[in-house]
Image 1 (cartoon, one colour):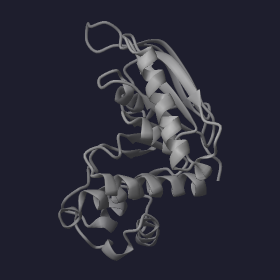
Image 2 (cartoon, helix red, strand yellow):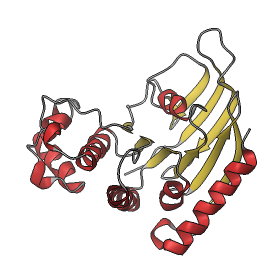
Image 3 (tube, helix red, strand yellow):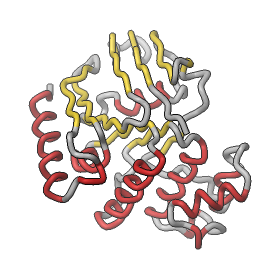
Length: 241
């Protein structure tokens, strides 16, 4: 299965009459690459995800997915800070009803893929926070397994759940090789999952630094992850404004 390439060229993005949030911002993402966007809250990371996903097309410039304008390309798979599940649907129907192209068999397979096979007919109110995030990931993969946009997917979860979800995401990245943009405030998330880290700062948003990791994701042990996370933290502090 081919993965998507992203080319981002935002010449200007502003809200109302305020100063530009983005100005002459460019970023390219290779097919199958996992890029972590790291920077302070409010810097523009989530806004960029919305532009990539075609949710917000009120900007000057061009964002393309394999050469197709983002607003015309198939929607990416989104994983949000909260799962955004429909409470009146069970797990299967949260995939089938929301995504018209997904049938029950495909939904069951994807739900099993994220470790929720025993809870396929559970409703969101019957699920823990971690289970809801897993279902959100299943929905994203069902929507578009080639392009994932992850907006702080581990926020507000305890450390045990975060560890379990990090391993789940890592296994999916290795098996499926989706092109992925991960927004995170935690350098360790980037150290565990990313191939490359892009550091955001300033207004308009600028890229204050980039780090490419030389150790394959599957080969990173605890010492490697700690070292890479420290490098991300140091680079972020050096580029802070």
